[in-house]
Amino acid sequence: MAHLAGKTKASLGSVMAAARKPHSLKSTLLTARLKERIARKGPISVAAYMEACLADKDAGYYPSRQPIGADGDFITAPEVSQIFGELLGLWAVTVWQSMGAPKPIVVAELGPGRGTLMTDALRAWRSVPDFLANVTVALVETSPVLREVQQTALYGSDAPVSWCTRLEDAAEGPLIVIANEFVDALPVRQLVWRAHEWRERCVRIGPRGGFDFCEGHAVPSESLQQLADTLDIPNGSILEIRPAANTLIAALAARAQDVPLAALIVDYGHETTACGDTLQAISRHKFADPLRNPGEVDLTAHVDFAALKDATIAHGLTAYGPMPQGAFLLRLGLEARRDRLCEGATDGQCEALTAGTSRLVDPSAMGLLFKALAITSPGLAPPPPFGES
Ligand code: SAH
Image (cartoon, rainbow, N blue to C red):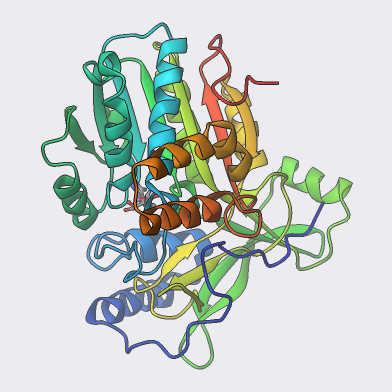
């Protein structure tokens, strides 16, 4: 089993954020609540800690802020270049055609952030009136703050848009799902290999009163035991598993029982399952300490695309990829689109377009670490560009 080196989110600086501003009131509240919970019930799993930090209704990271952009904590592909959302929008059109152009068609986006990807996709759909006339958009978003941002961005859009908190609640019928940098925000469990068994990695209150990692109860699992036995895993290795990603695949499979379905998951992560601690905190475009300022900093962990693919196949769906983001976008026609946009642009605009697209595909930026995995219901043609030789 390979070991994950300290790979980093491509769009970040490599230094740790220096002393952060003092705890906000909300972070202080969440800290107190977590400490009280740990004092009462003992250490909590890394997954439970991550879930509380990201999703706590009052003080969680996403429900309480708009974190994306130069003046936020991190930048995502749709914010880097409009071409990203346009190409993914056109990807959805081709997939729809391969389904036999069912009407209506629902396009659901999971975790739509500022609504930028969908705004760009909607613009691209203007060139395909038959699609635009039959598409309804479902935005799956749990953060009330981001919902408001999305409502503003998509106000007066060319297609009906609705919001829900779970994919299961998106309008019925044939479905195309897009999820960019969504899965990395779902909590991970961390298991530590210690004295021939897996133990849950937990968060406790340390001797100095702050949060601290510790090893909790043993996790009996035959398949995980086999994995450790057949591969020579050193003592202390950390394995990350993401139950919420399996729940997502199960929801896709349930929908695919009745209707054609395709999904595109783009995120940063690894192609093969490997040991390593990839839990990271991000604040103001720099790495931060995941155990400090809960709810104030973004927490993420790399996506295990092999596990996602295994879950897809186990649920009877078909998986394509993962393909590095650079190759994926280039094969979808990124350069031709950039050149066309440059024709009508000023020199400055063209330079910005070129810089943005380079960042998306450059192997040392987002081109390799980010990957695309496509999922379809059985019997559909391979989605672009996976079917090309
Ligand atoms: N896709 C966007 C934003 C990525 S940030 C982009 O590429 O710019 C993650 C997004 O997922 C945010 O919109 C966040 O509020 C949302 N989110 C996180 N966890 C979620 C969950 N469990 N259900 C629905 N949305 C979630």
